[in-house]
Length: 119
Length: 106
Image (cartoon, rainbow over all chains, first blue to last red; front, side, top):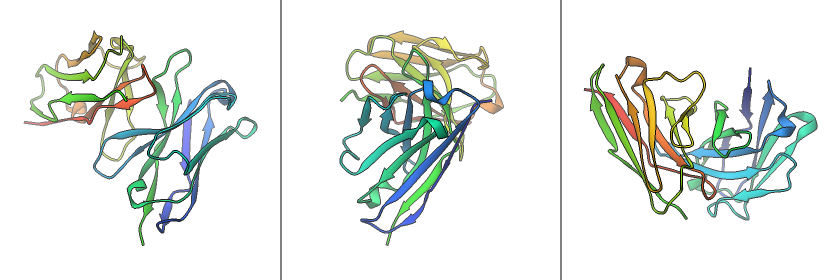
């Protein structure tokens, strides 16, 4: 069974940093590209970052470019999102999502971790 | 950036109703469109990909159609478990989601 479990969320002050993790199991993690998608309270979905299976291709939404860094450790079946210079508008539930093989939609999602940026 | 616009934003319906949600892209995305269902406090769940392909395990009452800039998600006979928010997503150029359509009980 495919499982994606996020962790690392919490309350952080504006300008602070946080590192999210996503632990993957039930599939060959090293062969799948992965994404981080966020959802502000009561709002819609935004894809903030993408990383290919071998980390050779990376994408960031304009809203986080230069502040967030996506990475992965295939030996540990883990995906990460380093978030720096956090702003109030970064407050959201952050989901990791698996990109489907041979296509570009997201076929599995984690349960999400809440990041709250507030003083 | 490709913008995705869903209509309506909210839809009130009864069990057994046929429900249609529309998603429009700001430019042609061929058939690179997915539909997701999200329930409160839960992660989105993939329903349809490539505009009309049903994800494994998804009930056949869900169907998708369209290409280019206009797409629809249809639920042929609404069931109690289907009251949720539905999002379209384009993956022609990076990824963009629609703003969501909430299907509520009439």
